Image (cartoon, rainbow, N blue to C red; front, side, top):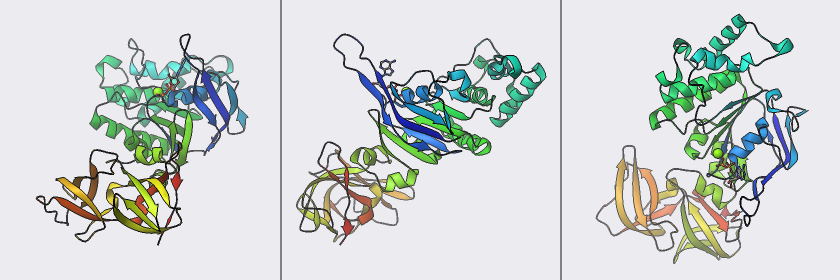
Length: 367
Ligand code: ADP
Ligand code: MG
């Protein structure tokens, strides 16, 4: 089921007398294709939960419309939208067994939709198998790990075979290892069910690793949407560039003069197409090539060996971050006692951004 947002906006009145209203979702106007796993990504407070709550109908928009396929669902109550919801804190009923928890949404069906106990149990078992907890059906939530509890919550959201599955930071309460494992599970379950799924997270690594498409948000506004690798390789503004990537992108004050990008006094790259002026330049950690005759000189801080790669930590007066991190292959030898380290910059790994409020990308070509 594709999802269409049509100029969807939600403004909350400010809390307290002096507070100004907050537009948590600001003019969402895009389409989510059918059968994909979408990562909705952005810092805390950017409006991710508000967007999900609008989708499932828990809150009403200030303006705009939501379509599931061709159906306008904007005015439809949550229980009739065909949406499954998984919350961060599992929200299981503690006094019920796993089986009872999973069956619960089916027990509310009325009239012609009412199911027999046998059918409900069969459906609960099917959902439990999908998330691989069918051997725990008689346990209570307190007798299970966080990861298992979250699987129960996912099974409960799937038991009615929703048209759309919404997950609001579903991995936040899990420890690091379980988070990795459970996100792979979510990917597998989505592949098997093909239910259009929106997965909310503030963790870019999580979103990048399992999503077919990511949607990056800031202060209620969509910044960019695309395949994870495309957004990483072609960020449209500085916010998107800095939000994606570990280690994070390295940001510098820079200028363009006579067809060259300058960082400090050094012309680090020959380009064409970007007008002369002041810019913010950002270089991905993998964009540095170690070269004793390189064009970009940084003060060497330390070298960290990470197995296959080496992380060179350095400093530069034009850097916006305290240190610069460059990742190079461990085939390279770095003299740890040297005062300086020199690099060349890979042209497709350095981006220029305007020094404007939007900090939008300014494109150039290699000269
Ligand atoms: P996220 O899930 O990305 O952390 P939220 O959607 O929870 O962000 O919140 C987005 C913004 O809307 C925040 O500034 C938050 O304070 C505000 N907000 C959310 N819900 C309400 C509400 N019920 N009343 C007033 N403001 C709200
Ligand atoms: Mg939230």
